[in-house]
Image (cartoon, rainbow, N blue to C red; front, top):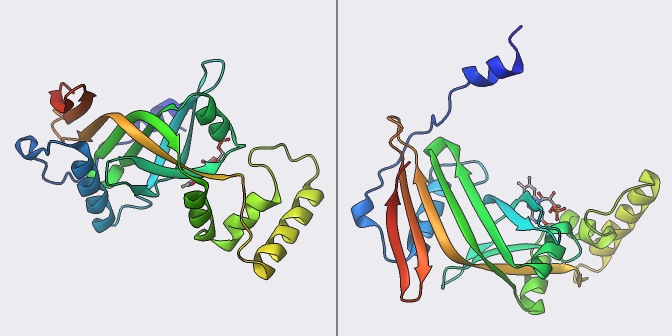
Length: 218
Ligand SMILES: Cc1cc2nc3c(=O)[nH]c(=O)nc-3n(C[C@H](O)[C@H](O)[C@H](O)COP(=O)(O)O)c2cc1C
C-alpha cells in the first residue's frame, strides 16, 4: 500500500485547462479583471466559484484562515463578504482590518490573491444580506454564537429548533451579530497556470498615483 507521501506525489497538479489570458490586454484596474475572471469561472461551471479563503490575524499575531462566500465586488473594487461579529474572524477583523482573500479555480488553473483592508458596511446592508440568506442559515445565526463550544448537544439542537420556528413564524427577524465587510484591496495578483510551468503572474499594487501592474516570475 502506498504511503500518504507516495499517494500525494502521484497526484497530478495544475491540470486545469487554461483560458486565454493576454497580459497586453490587462486593464488598468484590477477590478475589471477580477470581475472578468469571476464571470469566466461561473460560465465554465466551476464548483462554488464564489468560495474564497479569508485570512486574518489575531491579537497575538497568529494568522487564521477559513473559507467563505464572496457576496459582491463593488463598483470601486472592494470585495464584499459577510459573517458574524462574534466569530473568530469577526473579532479579528474588528481588531485588525488587514486581511487577505484568495480564490482557486482548479479546472481553469487560475488563482487570485488579494491583500486589503476590511471595513464594516452599515447595519442596513447587513440586514439586507441577512434577510436574503437561506432560512436555515438565518436560524443558525439566531441559535447561538458562531464558534462557541457546544457542551450540550441536546441543548444546541433545542436552540436550533426554536430558532427555526422563530424564522418560520417571524421571517423578518434580524440579527445584530450579522455583519457585511468590504475589503478594499491594496494588491491583487492573478495567477494563470501554464502546462509548461511558466505560469503567468500579474500583480496589481495600489500606489500613491493609483494602480500599477507587473508580471512576476513564476
Ligand atoms: C463553501 C463554504 C462557504 C462558507 N461561507 C461562509 C460565509 O459566507 N460566512 C461565514 O461566516 N462562514 C462561512 N463558512 C464557514 C467558515 O469556513 C467558518 O467555518 C466559520 O465562518 C467560522 O470561522 P471562524 O471561526 O474563523 O470565524 C463557509 C464554509 C464553506 C466551506
